[in-house]
Amino acid sequence: METAPVVRPPPYSIEQAVWPVQEEMGTLVAEPTLAQVAAGEAEEPSIVSLLLGGRSAGQCLIGTSLGRSLTEEAEGADTVRRLAERATRVSPHLRNVPVVAAWSGRRAMSPDGLPVVGPVTELEGLELASAFSSIGMMTIPAACKRLAEGSPTPEHRPGRFA
Image 1 (cartoon, one colour):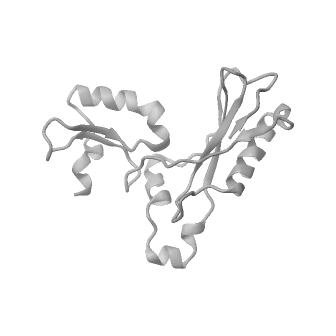
Image 2 (cartoon, rainbow, N blue to C red; image 1 turned 120 degrees about the vertical axis):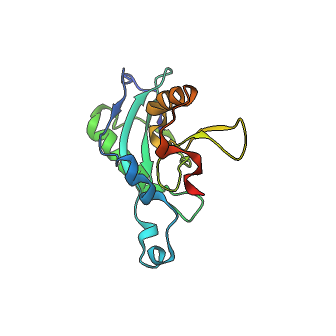
């Protein structure tokens, strides 16, 4: 979500530390099996973890969530409500600030939830650094450094799904 400009935008980002570990993410957002759909597991609510930060023009950005979906958009009013509840609990002075936008997007994830980093053996010269999901901003610099040095992490190799 994005708010209208606020009087005192946060000078730093606030992040709630309830996000699942990366190895669990693959199972949480992978395409559900037919048995999971029949049991209603594909309709479970998104995981919501507060990330609150200010923008240079004074607005606040509030997110983030993770969920699987068989429809176009995985997020709905409940996810937005849950994020707003956490943001107002952490920063009560935001209670009366108008929300000007809310949106969702797809995260780049592999079937096992781990990044895909390394050379593609079938296409000479092609190297990937992808599928970082929510950990990309923190981990992609180190992953790309290892890739450039010729030592990507073996468990992240692109061919592991073949």
